[in-house]
Image (tube, rainbow, N blue to C red; front, side, top):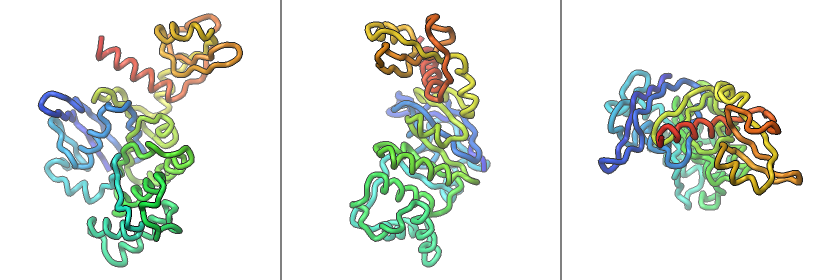
Length: 294
């Protein structure tokens, strides 16, 4: 399995670039596509899902150009879009039977596959309930089930945990990890903890361009020795934010415990602390924005 994105750009209304020169090669495992809202994640996902065409560049699936021969990918694609909707009056079985027929699965094969997937997503006991009565997390799990009907080699999920409560988010992340196996899973999100919990590789995107692509370990190493905790008075927090990249600030009885990312120790009282993926993400995004707007 090999998905190759080569210098892909997407232009809207003749002048607005949603993507610009994006290149990436993806293999089996979970790729976390991480970036702020409006970074171009959904545009890229729609191109990969053959819903929209790139203005420039190309995408190949096992050597086949998906714009020229989309059916080669569609036969092996599962897609959960950000705005996934359901038919509220249908139950889970009826809904999945309908989509199975659309994908060419019929009869016993479809029924067997639907039962398997409802068990995988833990909805077997509520399979006869109308989808309109499902919680947001349950609907997302039905979304994953429909995306897996054809046992895809490429599974794309776009902002799958947005709006879910913490328990549903954890359950959904665990499900994605279990599904990776011998397939490519692309998880597009702006939530660092979702990527941290599931991804084997991470691509950071900002302003439609690829900022970096690396393993979680490599990203953590990139900020090793550059993350500090500094206790400062509350009155000094605003000034500190102007001078340093502060990833979090917690008010305590002895002052504000500010966590910041910087190459140099900001103050003799600042202590080095182990980095997190959020530290690495913020540093890369900040450096990219400085380069773009310099």
